[in-house]
Image (cartoon, rainbow, N blue to C red; front, side):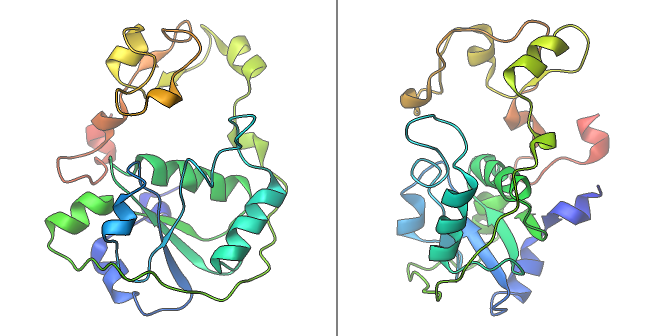
Amino acid sequence: MARSDVLVDADWVEEHLDDEKVVLVEVDEDTAAYDRNHIKGALRLDWKRDLQDAVRRDFVSKEQFEALLSAKGIANDDTIVLYGGNNNWFASYAYWYFKLYGHQDVKLLDGGRKKWELDGRELVAEQPERAATTYQAAEPNNDIRAFRDEVVASIGSKNLIDVRSPDEFSGKLLAPAHLPQEQSQRAGHVTSAVNIPWAKSANEDGTFKSDEDLI
């Protein structure tokens, strides 16, 4: 998969702000950021409320995802462009969700909210309204997930990457200081895992590093 299959830049987004079939969706670590301002026309998905089963702390079900997107006015043939703060941390999580449930055309705004703000581009407070749809999700593509037994079987034999902070990886912290409710049950990391913090994948302006820089 090429970078262009996943990433669009801010210029592309500005050119498509009035395109009804291009739906911007903000998924921010700071769930209050959207209420202050956001890119014109953007919807919000709240990672705490919308993208996490309250009982199982796992992905919401296919039926829950269908109900969520239907209520938001998202259709199966829409182009979804996700963005957020913290180098698109939760926007990337949402990207995984959309791919898990078979959405065909989903992108990330390279640089997310940070790059948009650094460029001095317009942010608005007005929240859009879209007519409800009947979204139909596919059965979950579990080929893009790794379950516990698969991870255990891979210890020492396959690449296991831990993208949390060094303090979480070492066991010093159970969760980021600003997200204490997300703490793990045990400190430390999976045996043989390598720590490549999420922050290391992005440039200062929030855009993802090039393939060469990542290598």
